[in-house]
Amino acid sequence: MESSDINNSSAIEPQEVTSEAHPQAPDETNKRQRICGCKCSGFRGNPRARGLATIGAGRGSLLAANIFISTSLLYLASEEAGCIDENNQTFDCNTKVYGFQPSSLITNIAIISGILAAIANPIIGAIVDYTNYRHMVGFWSCIAIIVIQAIQIYTVSSTWFPMAILQAVAAFMYQIVITTTYAYFPELSSEVGEKLVQNISPKLTMLQFGTQGLFIVVVIAFSMGLSADDVLTAQISQGINVLFLILTFCIGWLKFLPKVDAKRVLPEGQSLWTAGFTQIFHTAKHIHGHYQQSIRWFLIALCFAEAGASAFAVCAISFVNEVLKMTGTETGMLFLIVLFFVVPGAKLSEVVVKKTNYNTCWRLNMIYFSIITIVGVWMMVDENDKGSAYLMGIFWGIALGWYYATQNGFFAVLVPQEQATEMAGIYNFASLIIAWLPPLVFSALNESGIPLNYALMHLVGYFVIAIGFLSLMPSWDKVLAESHGLGDASTKSAEGTTYTTQGDIEPDAASSDGDLEKQ
Image 1 (cartoon, one colour):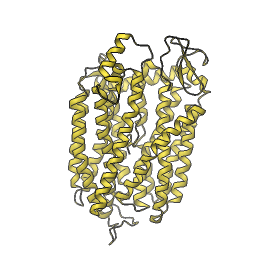
Image 2 (cartoon, one colour):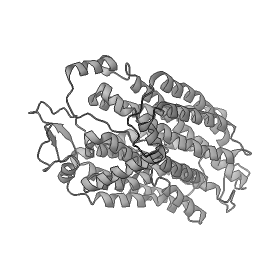
Image 3 (cartoon, helix red, strand yellow):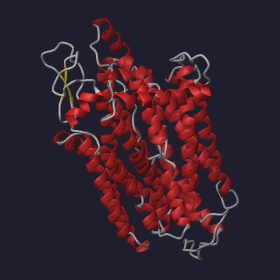
Image 4 (cartoon, helix red, strand yellow):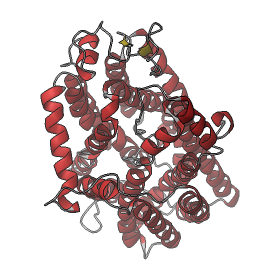
């Protein structure tokens, strides 16, 4: 999974929302159809869509490979600490290595990469906006990841610690890849139109999930066929991943995604080191002044909710390895189950939103996420509870699919379309700003001798805080009225768009200008 993309993040990443809330002239529509190809089936005919799809497939395989390399690093760290018995199984011991317990290794890596990503995000954003180097930065970040993945094939007892450092660097590079690739979404929207982007975006996400799941299946098959231990399984995973990344990343960047010019002119007196932070400050100030009851509470809630969700996969790997003594193959099977049930979770989000609204749906999701996490950690207390872990994988998959589908839709409905690009920048920053905090707390609790059940359960606290901020929003009518500049939630905008209480944006049948697609 991807930790903010892995996430984080997590295996599921927020997609940048772009839109055009105005009708298109006939000649412009024809131009888009020519660019997109016949009825825009799949990604054929549009280089940006194909590039994003190809790179997305590579990202999916990378996230899957991280599961196996993380398990290998945990094993090797435990081995150096003397916490491996004669059957090559880890056992509880208080020995530390390089100043920390082996079970804290993966979360320590997440702390380093998370802090680097939060600091660098505005700078990378400025490079994307104010220079012609977006393509170059994205491509060479991918090359750096490929090189690191190749080096990590030689992850063994004598090299595990420098490989762990490289893992933190790779996670940071991954965030740069996300920032540079998502910057192509506004141009994709301009070329094919918002309606077709809404058709393409789910395909991009499903392609990444599908690749991630297929990669896990292939590695597990090799591991079981060769009776491989965690270290060999990770080496097999890294080798396959390097070959696949060379194919997908190079084709995506060199064949499909074009080089682009700067989108803005750097303000006089500013540098790339400060322009991104300045832009975020001004955007935050604008939101505080104009969207106090809607977007402001959403973004504050997002900081905490995304911190908890993106840290889940990282903390879960440490938990199942240390508490349940799961091997790399078993951990891969667990996350395969999680991935499989992400889709039903996304469908559940659609159902709940239609019956309530995005605010209520997101809060219900985090309540559900919190309950199953609390139940899960008390069901799984030792290596005899691996079956319970596979069962909980079903419920956690539903939770994650429901979570990200709701979060992305909530943002899409709230943001004024003419400010989508500007808001996307602060949305990404809010997703990263405290992503390092849950891994830090997890490691601190672990180092203090607190059982990992409590360490994993502390993630619930971030959801509770997020629910609290979302509860400060007024009624859904008032939220939409403020976020879209309407005096009354029941009134219509200049484009003839009606904002309903169910979180939908529907075109007014009586207006020729109402071409907004339903969210």
